[in-house]
Image 1 (tube, rainbow over the protein chains, first blue to last red):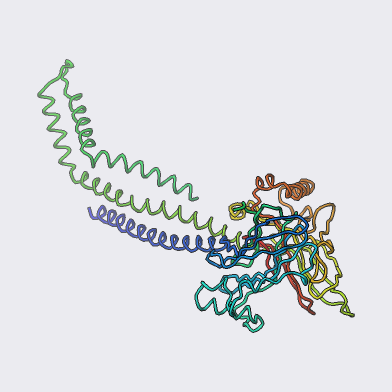
Image 2: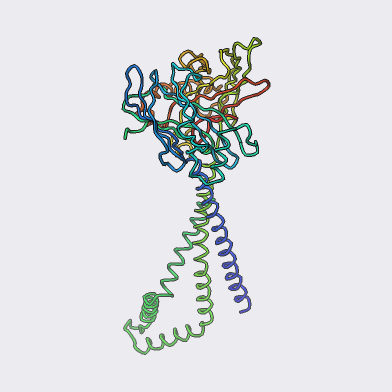
Length: 198
Length: 285
């Protein structure tokens, strides 16, 4: 009888131990899964900072540009005429060590216009010492970007992982009646895609 | 190994369900009672083969006495069944933990693939002695799945007027799901250089090829998995040729394709490296 009792006790204790082992492993794995999903979502997140509609494409191309802030709210829009069949969008990309990328569109030119003759567009979103694209991000980042825009070389390297000027353009030229979106990932990767005209 | 464990757990669950039905439901006990009745009834025939009430009663008393004399074993049995039942939450926890472990492993691999950066170009940029032109020295790289690293596939030098140079590449980004599962890897093919003074149309081609294969995709026989070199080359040629066809490229899982140029400033002893990223686009380091 004693042996039976010990055996049953052993089974019950083992059962409890295994239950708590699996229970806490499950909680640990659930937390890990949540973190991984968040990180994957962050990497796949696309911040559309610019959209342009090709209104007319005869001798000159007439383009309607829209700039968006980090929350996707329209900040400003403007019309530009450009020579050529393609649009080159040059932007300053600053990748921060805090897993975040800041993008500042700088110039518009084309396959026939060299960068030095491009149209500077910073004045459309840098108003009264403020970068409107990042105004809604909170005081700390907003001040950082304003400072960055005014004088990047003064920003300490301890905050910046890498920075570069990236230029987006299509492979075969833009088409009248089409819209194009420029977006950035948190690691600084820029992308361009054709979207349906709205 | 996980599949084997799941199978064992499934079998234990079957045993548990049978025991639960027999001892913990009214129908189970009715079934046991009927079986006992049947055994006693069958053993209650006299020598002539007729049913004998006296034998039935005697047999019934004998079996009942047997049941009560073994009540201790019955109690132990029930406690064992209870112990087994107490293992059911453990089994369920184990099943959920194994399933979560699989998810975490898969998500970890997906994150790694999205975070991957493949080296495309290494560049040094400097002015000529008379500062009239920029000299760009490029090293091309391709990813070898066998060595799991980026290997140098060629080198070239270009000169262009200006004060900064733009390295333009064709960028092909595949659907996130394909990249996450490792079925596809985003590509980038160096295409042209232009400068602040020289427009894209007047730029210089850097689309160096070897046997019609861009250097960024050129691999030797030893660096290719499964495919024969000729088969690999034909796959690459197909991919490059279908890029202009939007429907075909979408069918291949291409999410976006466009051109991206990265600006480089002349600097002595500075090495620029351009990477193609798993999430899409290029980065300079």
